[in-house]
Length: 178
Image (tube, rainbow, N blue to C red; front, side, top):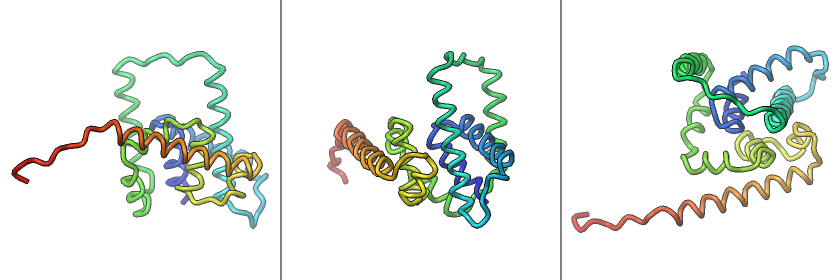
C-alpha cells in the first residue's frame, strides 16, 4: 500500500532506479526490524517516510565520507538493469502514481536532482507527498522552522533553475506555412 509512494519519493531523492529500490528495500527491512517501536494509532505512512528519510540521509553521509564507487562493466550493468526493470513491473501502480510520474518533465526532474538532498527531500515531501510541515519535521528530525526554510529555499532554487533553462532554450520561429 505504501510501497508506491515510498519508491516514487526514493527515486526522486536518489535520481536512479537501482538506488531507489535499495532505499525502499532498506526502509522496509528497518520497518520490520523496528516494528515494536511503532506506536499504534499514529500515522504509519509518516513513520515509514521517516525511516526512508533517515536511511537516505545516512546513506548519503556514508557516500560522502566513503570511497568512490567503481564503474561496472556493460555485462553486469545489463543484468542489473534487467533485474531493475523486472522489479519495477512488480511494484503496484495506482492511477494517481501513473499520472504523477508523467507530470514531471525532464527539466523539473533535473532541477530536483540539482537541489541539495535536504532541500530536495523537504520539497518532495511537501509538494509531492503532501505531508504537513510538522510531519516533515518529525520525519527529518529537524525543527519546523528549518523545514519551512528548506522548502522555501528549495522552491526558490528550483524556480531559478527552471528560469535559467527557459532562457537558455532557443525560441522557435513560426514557419511561414503555419
